[in-house]
Length: 249
Image 1 (tube, one colour):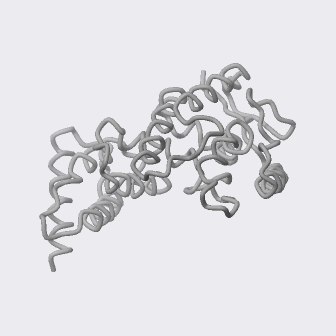
Image 2 (image 1 turned 90 degrees about the vertical axis):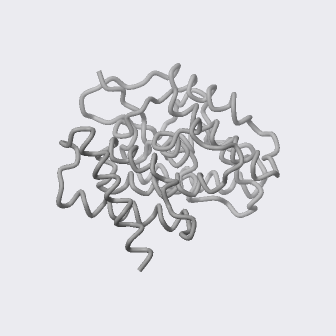
């Protein structure tokens, strides 16, 4: 049975954001926080499945707190902050599983950031001074959906500890999960495995972005999900050649 996660409606998000912004400005602990996810504004999807329990939501919170801390100082060192983000992403995937479709009801990630883990968001983005509105709302800048998707498509176990560039590549991949390429996870993994295929004279991130563009176009003319593994790997090699050729012009 599919697990159903809570979400906040647009109106509930607006009300929660107003409270969070006031708490932020006054230096208070976020008053929308519920350690087991129980909140007057939460709803569950109406289709088939089983709503996750308050105990399960509390376990998710505990898993994130175990690696992110609660209200301590955000690490000043970029490498330490990057490693903390990766640990949070790892914890989210371990607890929530690897099916992003189950988590992308509108308002679900807003629920996580506004109700279940707002203190973690406060800590992570406090150095910016300005209220980090987009880190609470749904979307590509949500504090937790971004880390979850990064870990899902480019596991931190495959990244070097001090390579910030890999995080930039992961961000490019996160963008794909809002577009059609995300439907073929095998192709995404094949492209990830070729992220270092750029010739030395090409910028690594520019190459990877072009590679993703080539793959996105290819899926409009080829049913990549139906390809055998060998054929898919061959196609990925061709996409690399096309990307390099286009950038070398």
